[in-house]
Length: 105
Image (cartoon, rainbow, N blue to C red):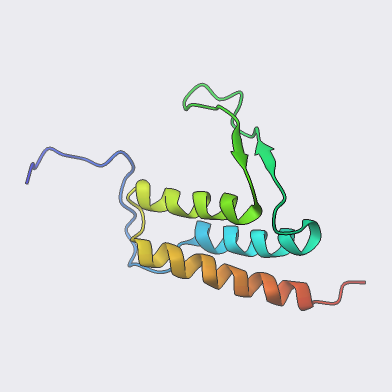
């Protein structure tokens, strides 16, 4: 082990739970799929003007594709293990289903 090694992102000081990004992404995908369908392709230009990262627009074939990419980023960033990511997306989809049951005025 190299004592001088540090991760790109600091490891958060909390126990392993489901990934918040995964839960949010799963919930958003569930709700958006109910509105626009399962195969709604789109482009995300959110980071196009950023200079600190590669802001190239991202293309997605579906909301699930987007949710899964957002979720797995937490693994690549060294923030969560894969189980917390996969469970988080599933948990988020359940949240989305419950949101869809709400009666808004």
